Amino acid sequence: MSTTPAARVYRPTPRNLAYLAKVLASGGLVAAPTETVYGLAADALNPKACRAIFRAKGRPANDPLIVHVDSLEQAGEVAVLNEAARQIARAFWPGPLTLVLPKQPGVPALVSSGLPSVAVRMPAHPLFRELIRRSGCPLAAPSANMFGYVSPTTAAHVRDGLGRRIGHILDGGAASIGVESTILDLRDPKHPALLRPGAVSREELEYVLGRKVAAYKRKVAAHTAAVAPGMLERHYSPRTPLTLVRKLTAPHVRRARPDEAFLFIQKPTATKTSDCITKTANNVFWLCDARGGLAQAAHHLFDQLRSLDSGAWTRLHAELAPGQDALALAINDRLQRAAAKR
Ligand code: TXA
Ligand code: MG
View 1 (cartoon, protein in one colour):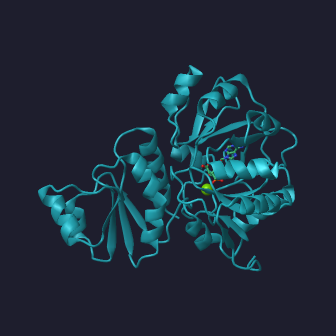
View 2 (cartoon, rainbow, N blue to C red; view 1 turned 60 degrees about the vertical axis):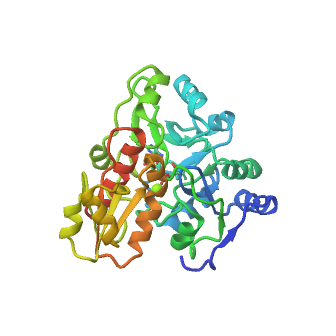
View 3 (cartoon, protein in one colour; view 1 turned 180 degrees about the vertical axis):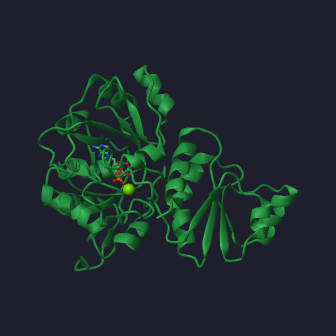
């Protein structure tokens, strides 16, 4: 699969959008931005096009795809919408939330890895929506990275990973959220469960549903990979070994070798110890500045991991995001999976 010439990167002009929509409608692949991460899109109802997604990413066939739609009506053509799904869709779509629901028969088995369910999401990104509208197709799209590697949040990330394996990349700038959508299992509306943490919190979902949503459990997801495919514990992984601690401190940095890098969630503030960290160390990095919050940290997470991974560091040390809010759980899930042993 090294036959495709280097990918072309397209600016989002009306002409380019019209062209890329045609590529999609005729069974081609296009990488395009959503507000969470970049996706590698194809016509979800065309099995050949979807097979090409798996091939380009080196993705195993037991890891099902998310189908992106532009309207509730289109969602209903892909998935069987129960009342809970309609309620949730009204509250959170378009947005960073994916629903797992019973599949409609028209969706190829390949898309859902043979499962009777399908994952469906209405993204908020205007360019991705435009591609769905203009192509007239629901678009199957996993994150546009080689399987197992860090997800892409810019067109340059997509080109770095897939540039010789796909032909078309739409450049819509950096993805605003930066971590993948929350996934909610609503196959049985009486027993909703969180399958992946993202920007939409479990509490918000519970509020709208008026009932408990089973919490996400990373280890369980990994152990039941055969039942809930794609939930491999090791994922999002830089090539450089990554170690996690709950909280990084000045002594961690002082004790390390100079070829080890440290990733703080927030820029260390000018207290005595941490001041000396940022002033003297060129191996200290952070995801948000002293006034920035977790939204900024999530936005930078994958870009920072990729950039550290392309440096000459022999080991990366990262700390977990504090607290229990949706983005803290999402960031920590991605970090923990990135650090999981092979
Ligand atoms: O934000 C996002 O969700 C991005 C953008 C592009 O939409 N997409 C994304 O796709 O993260 P991907 O392929 O990297 O992750 C999709 C995951 C699968 O790995 C699997 O865990 C879950 O969605 N999934 C898909 N279909 C499922 C199903 N029928 N049952 C359970 N889980 C499913
Ligand atoms: Mg992915």
